[in-house]
Image (cartoon, rainbow, N blue to C red; front, side, top):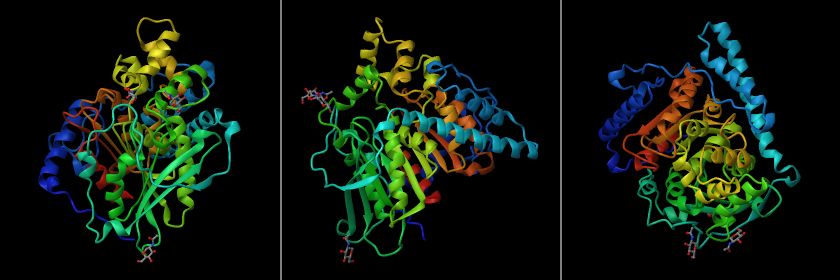
Length: 450
Ligand SMILES: *[C@@H]1O[C@H](CO)[C@@H](O)[C@H](O)[C@H]1NC(C)=O
Ligand SMILES: *[C@@H]1O[C@H](CO)[C@@H](O)[C@H](O)[C@H]1NC(C)=O
Ligand SMILES: *[C@@H]1O[C@H](CO)[C@@H](O)[C@H](O)[C@H]1NC(C)=O
């Protein structure tokens, strides 16, 4: 089918955009000195490739976690590491590719096992329940102020009588037993007879927000011929009853260890969503993209890592080195985003202040493996060879760029044979914020690859 192409917003005049891209790539080069082989964006000063110092580092941080429950991880990491350090006689390389593929499959299986560990008794067949539009969406914490200029800037296609042509579906997928096992879904698409199937993009919202927040993006992509899908993450939107539901759930997971409200439980839902989407008659199952902002970027990253049906992947300000942050005393901004959880843990652990040990213990309890075998250096590269665009602010304290050095180097290595399918952009001068430029880059990426 023909690709829907958006009409560029005037502020993204090609020339300005090119300059900005160069600036970003240069910033990246300076910040990272990481492998870089992206012809379209090659920074002239660096001659297309930026010298690598980091790519051949050995894996580290394989600390024993959870009393050896995940002991498989060291082997997986070692296998990936040995792949990354292999220099290329082609036979050896074919062998190591098979080894890497096997290691990737093992890592996915281990992650599925962790997801299953807390829901073995909760499993039900996937079913769909009818829903209706949410009139007054629940935002937790401070309510969003006005519109998001970044989302409003997303390229759209001019479609006559757009509102009339837009089909909106609201439904629930039953992903497991229990109140949280009801996944609210909002789907938008154009009512047109051809093509018969369309590409889909799944959009994931940030902490404390909800699927309705993403509507400008959903509509923009729908105007361009995509099916746009958003969900409420666990304990958000329709899955919350008041403005502390998410924080309450995080604290409860710390106390009881029976749920995984940070990232993992929502990834379970995203696997189920993948089941649903790939069976729909209006969907091309080979063309399911996934993206998200902040917590949503983490969801996109982990869903794509574990479920290969997500075929084009754009995590925005979400990928980070959890272990790196602990080892380098850079975990504070992340902790601050869900502070009451860590305060609770600090008190339980009898400490005067939140420290590295508190952070480690919390992750181990509520998201086992997050700062070890499933951390970015191991889970990001195995998204290869599916097109992967990582978008970040160069000054983001929650996803610090130095903590991305290892995952980006390893990913660059994993994408060596398909270098145009991997890109990392750290936008200069930007903190933890999704910018109009990131929205544009994501949009171009999906148009190009999905
Ligand atoms: C939750 O709502 C109550 C009452 O509306 C308000 O006082 C409180 O500050 C809110 N809490 C947060 C975290 O926004
Ligand atoms: C789609 O449009 C056709 C007319 O072009 C109309 O008959 C049909 O009801 C519309 N479908 C939906 C779901 O709105
Ligand atoms: C908020 O909702 C949660 C469940 O979502 C509940 O456990 C808690 O008691 C509620 N808090 C208030 C103040 O209503």
